[in-house]
Length: 163
Image 1 (tube, rainbow, N blue to C red):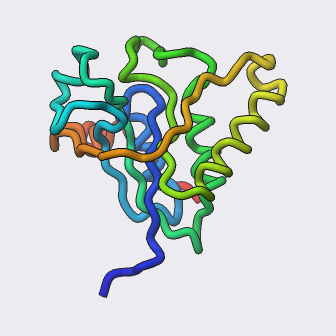
Image 2: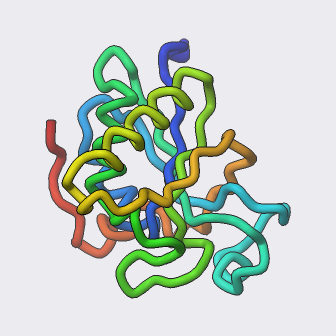
């Protein structure tokens, strides 16, 4: 029997490998998948997305139990994993596919994401620089190729579970 309390969240914060590894460490997260969301091209491949013509962001789909971890806690992981003041740029990765984006599934997720973004933007954390993170309705999530799934863990570069 499937647990009906499991919810989904999708976040884009640059290269999906490290973002996925961070979410996998959170107690209450039951699964993660890396992939592509927010574009206009069906069934994109990594190469399609890297060419920058599909409109997709590299993203992580998180399945979580809200009785154990709140959406706000997931937002904190998201904000702590990247710099949301740099448009289309995270570390060495540059391009629209690396944008900072929250894909919300429910009006509650939208409200929590917007409130969280506003709070961060008004804090001294980023010297009051504008937060460029998009907050948009969730669209089709396309799972990335298997070699991208849990990439850092497969290569011995992911940490142990926290929380």
